[in-house]
Image (cartoon, rainbow, N blue to C red; front, side):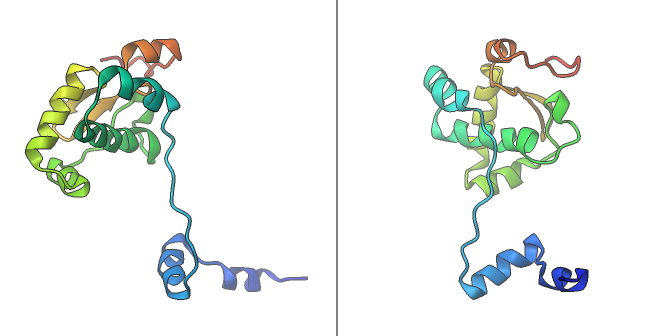
Length: 140
């Protein structure tokens, strides 16, 4: 019978797994995010989003729907810096602002305050209604 101490001694945390796997040469599977297929099948096609708009939308979407977020049920992201977003995406800050304006025109996102956004779960008002998505009485 294996005792608890030997099991715990062999356990590696996720942080340690990344660095130790590189040393040993193990393959570490990438993390994943849940993006509805409707994004690939309908949204990109119907709205003709460009590369930068897709990057910005996915960045905000992941912050709202894919990461731990206290405001998820309202569709609202945590506060984030525009300069940090630009740096993480490898884009100019002007491109970030332009993409944010375009996504707001499409009503896919809404600025709550600088660096905090409402993001629709199914990207458009019509798709939210079709898939019965509500935001706990919060509607923009």
